[in-house]
Length: 200
Length: 205
Image 1 (cartoon, helix red, strand yellow):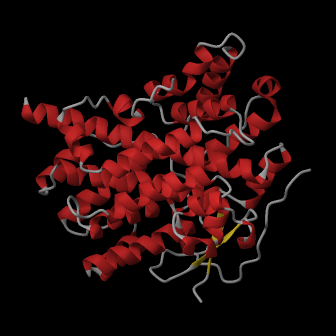
Image 2 (cartoon, rainbow over the protein chains, first blue to last red):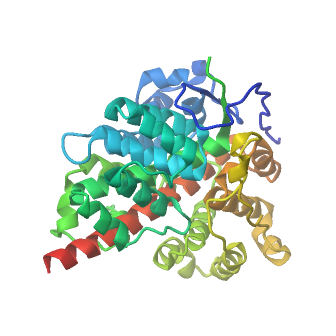
Image 3 (cartoon, each protein chain N blue to C red):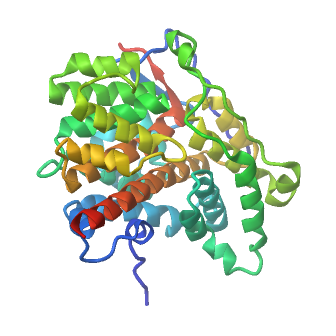
């Protein structure tokens, strides 16, 4: 039997990049909360994620979701060493802006603003795009993230030299690479499995 | 006896034990382990569910080829190389990679002020002759993979319906989406860390 995609009717969908807290609605049926087994709950990593239609959809492949979630958390939250959180979020925002994921860009631009206190600069990136001028250190991070996001990747030694010149060490550069690369995973899921809905 | 798979990112980025980048990666043990676990969950799962091993490798090879990464293409297509029955798939996928070649990201934004940033690009379809040998299900997967690789912002519920109509289940579409997206991530980590490794070796030489 053929299963069916959901074609939601979204009124006033977000059509620009924003830092507002917008929503997301799936195009495929998430698992119902009451049908989640131990295996699914393990895949969700955090029990609270059972409330999210996005995670209840991805949990249809629980082992992949579990590994992906743990990769995500370490890339962004493990800040005992390496790049400050704000700049990891900047890499995520730049990749999402370039790929065109309005939902991912909203979440991660908000985090970038929160951790950097540079809300206006972050908004400039959303409004003007990845070519905007945010000062050399941020420009170098955005340029590297964008080059890595291009298909095929256009990331080259010049991006590494520019980041080094900006004072980033090898671990910090590796953090940029992971942050931007991870959003090439996240953007593809968010953009292809559902769509953004307006802020409440 | 089970053999533990080598770390695929280290393997394909050319990171050797004890190198500077190996020590850097060691500072992110969870990222390293979970990126590998993601690979294992997609390519060596306990249960292949609705997506066969051959389908997974064919799609990953196609994604690597579209990214113009010959080493990663070879890595994912190697099981076909050793197979008497599936060897033909490599040539078919290579032909489709050639036909699907593009530069991304491109595509359209939802109607509104961002339409000024819309960028045109090719819509790929599996050739008739390849479709005959690949079948409907795998052909639909390659077409969807091309969309996700190059013009993800053109994705739509209709694109998912096309997969369902071609015989994919909802669970299968989730696995397929994760697979294409994971390989897009893995390729970028390999490309980035590979270059970083070269740059570091040069700086310390």
